[in-house]
Amino acid sequence: MSDTPEQPQFPRPITPGSQASFGTYRHQPVSFVRRGTRLQGRRQQAWEEHSDKFVVDVPRHIADTSVHPDYAFDAEEEFGRKAPLIVEVGSGLGEAVVHAAEQNPDKDFLAVEVYAPGLANTLLRIGQRGLTNVRVVQANAPEVLETMLPEGSVSEIWVFFPDPWHKARHHKRRLIQPAFAKVAAKALEKGGLWRIATDWSNYAVHVREVLAGSPDFENVHHGERRGADSPLTQVWESGVETMVGGAPVKEGRAPVSTQHTGPSEGVDDVGGWAPRFDGRIRTSFENKAHDAGRMIFDLTYRRI
Image (cartoon, rainbow, N blue to C red; front, side, top):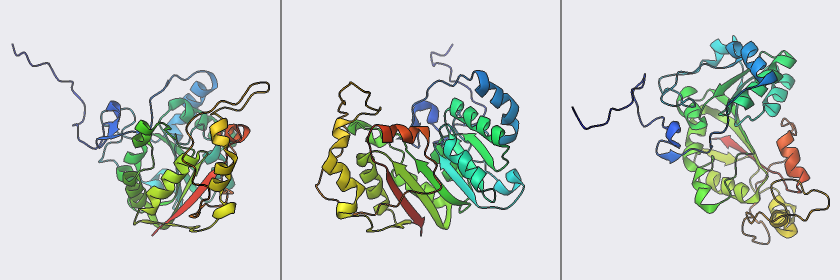
C-alpha cells in the first residue's frame, strides 16, 4: 500500500484560475472572508421562491464562490432582450442595485456577492417590487469580470463601499488593485464607466493611485474638487477619522480612534473626486458612515 495520502477528487480539473476556497485567486488573496451562509425566515422563503428565476446558476470550479473558466454569461439570453448591462460588485443586501433597477427599467443589472444572506435579501427586494431586470450571482468578482462576462459586454461597473482592509499587512486584500483594474477594463465596453465610493480616505487615495496608473482608464473628473474643495482636504483638516470609529458615536460615550486614517498631507492638490452619483441610493451601510461623521469619496472612471 502506498504511503502517499489520497488526494480529494473534484468534478472538474483544478487550474490556477480559481482557488477561492483556499483564500486566493490566481495566487492573490481574495478580498473577502467567508461568513455565515445560513438562511432563515423571510430570506429562506425568498430563496425558495425566487432563486430559480433570478440566481445565475454558474458551474463551479472547486469552491462555492468560484466560476468555471469555460462558462460565459449571455445577458441577452438571460434577460430576453438586448439592453445596457450594469454590474454591481459587492451588492450587499441589494439596496442599491434593486433601487437602480426599479428606476431604470430599460437597463439590466447583475448583482455580484459572495454572501448568501445578502443575495437572499436581494431576492426578497426583487420579489417585493416585481422586477425582471435583475439577476444575482454568488461568485468571486475577479472571476466574474475576467471569464464569466464576455469582453466589452458591460456598460457600467459599480463598487460601492468595499472592505477597506485597514491594517497595512492586509492592504494586499483590497479589492481594487492593478490586477482587478485589468479585468474590469476587459469586461467594460469602450467608454463604459466604473463608479466607486468609499467612506475611508486611506482607501480613496489607494483607489485614486491604482487607477491613475492604469492605461485603460481616465478619471472623468480629473483635477476637480481639489485644494479646499477636496473632501480629502476636509477630512485631513477635521481629523474625523482619527476620532470616529466604524460605528456611530453613541450619546454619552467618547468617540474611539480607529488609528486607520491615512497620512495627512494638509491639502489635496490632486483632486479628481466625482460628485455624488445620483443613481446610488443612500443605503443603511452608508447611513452608518454618515452617522459616524465620516465623509464619502466618489470616483468615476471611463474605459478608454
